[in-house]
Length: 134
Image 1: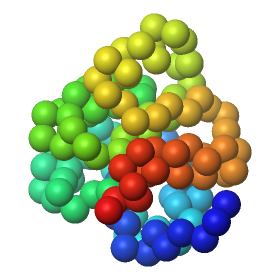
Image 2: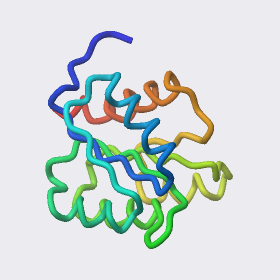
Image 3: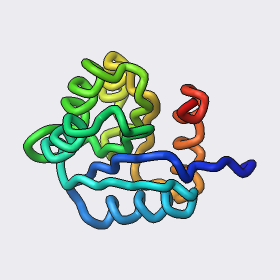
C-alpha cells in the first residue's frame, strides 16, 4: 500500500470483546492513525459519538453487542453523519445481514476472522470512498 498520512484521523473502535477491540486498535496504530477512541458496546459508542461525532473520520464497529447493536449504532450515526465511513465487523456474514447493513449505507463489511492485512485493505477502501477524510 502507498504511504498515506493518517496521523490526523480520529477513529472510533466499538466491540464488546476486549481481544478483538485491542486487535483492531493495534492495526489502526500500525497504520499511523493519530487518535483512536474505543467503546465497549454500542450504547457507549453512541454516547461518545453524540459528544463529538463531528470529529470522527471512521467508525469500526462489531455487529453483535449488548445494549445497542452495531446495526442500531449505524442507524443512529446515519441520522446526523451520512458521509462518515462506517466499517462493520462481524462473524454474522449472512446475505440477510449484509443486506440489512447495506440498507443503512454501511461503508464496508468485514467478516471475522480476518488478518491485519485484510482489515487494512477494508479500512483503505472505506476511507477512499470519502477521499481519506478530505
